[in-house]
Amino acid sequence: MKKFHTVIVGGGPGGLACATLLALQGKAVLVLERNSSIGPKVCAGGIPSLAQGLGFPEDLWERSFTSQHISSNWQHAVIRDAGPIIRTVDRGRLGRWMAEKAVAAGVTIASNTLVLKVGEDRVHTRNGEEFGFSFLVGADGSSSLVRRQLGIPTEQIGVGINYQVPGNFPEMQWHLNTDLFGNGYAWVFPHQDTASIGVYARRSTSKPGPLLNSLHQWAARHGLELKSRQPQAALINSDFRGWRFGNRFLVGDAAGLASGLTGEGIYSAIVSGEEVARTILDPGYESKKMDRIIERHRRHSRILDFASGSKLGGKLVLEGLIFCLRAGLIPFSALEMGIDQPS
Ligand SMILES: Cc1cc2nc3c(=O)[nH]c(=O)nc-3n(C[C@H](O)[C@H](O)[C@H](O)COP(=O)(O)OP(=O)(O)OC[C@H]3O[C@@H](n4cnc5c(N)ncnc54)[C@H](O)[C@@H]3O)c2cc1C
Image (tube, rainbow, N blue to C red; front, side, top):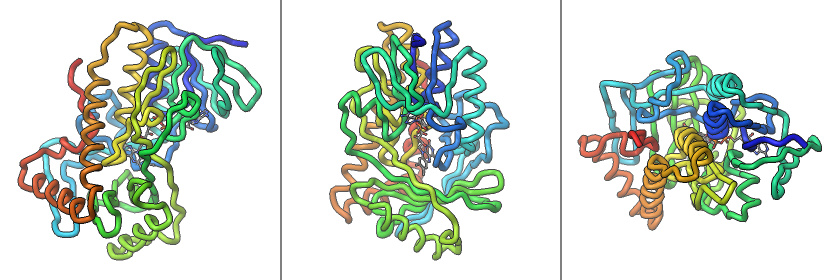
């Protein structure tokens, strides 16, 4: 059996960020990824402004938007800023770029390798291999096996449905229609020559079938033809219950760090991945960034819980939020997941 300092289950942004940082410090790191290629993932690819300092090269960005169009039952707001408020990335390209960086740092990436079981000091794969570890990182997304094997339940979970539609879409749009989407929203996030058009909502209040019907109704009203296309759906875990468990760690969606309010999780996956690496390297490390991400995450959950209390309450919270954005009382960044301040 081959032994590594750290084995990371999952080659998404969280796993790769963690792996690169550890390898740069000379550690032997193995990333196990069940898919044949690194990167592609059901996702709208929206990256908020505060997360744009993560060092992505300029040519990785698909599109940049200095204005956001937000519609609700009662209002339409256009929020503008001097710089890009949100930019979009293609997950395939982001994954390839992160994987190249990881390999250059010395990480071993094994794709087509599904982890089936985690033992005391080793993981077992479907290919019949075993890999030993001193540290294990669960970066295996919203249905994380590592999380389940740690005995951590997942109750607060959202569902996201995405269509990638060809065409040139000029505006980035958010549609917070409580009659159709409850406390979720539909979006149009333009990429280079396509747009991600989709919907996100909490699974406890919106089941995937009715949510898809609502998306189709909304799209028809906006002259968007989706029904002839193939949707893709995935879960988004926002049930955060901790990230370090002895020599095992959870990052990103596996840790439930995606926002329950917006469904965003790329930024928190990357930052939590890096912070886990720093903690593995120095067990005394106090991660202020992790504290801030967790605090932000809890704030988002509290807003969502409050809005879920009653239908009218939910509507009033959303309308109040949009009014405050329109009036400039709160910046758009207040809704964002990222808070990349120096630690
Ligand atoms: C429809 C939709 C739209 C979204 N839009 C946005 C957005 O605009 N902006 C944003 O920030 N976030 C968005 N998200 C959320 C975002 O995709 C996730 O938060 C992000 O990908 C989390 O990164 P991660 O590294 O934690 O997990 P993931 O990206 O899910 O990576 C986990 C990896 O682990 C692998 N894996 C899982 N199990 C195993 C196993 N047993 N063995 C080996 N490998 C395994 C998977 O194949 C995957 O590659 C969206 C999600 C959905 C569903």
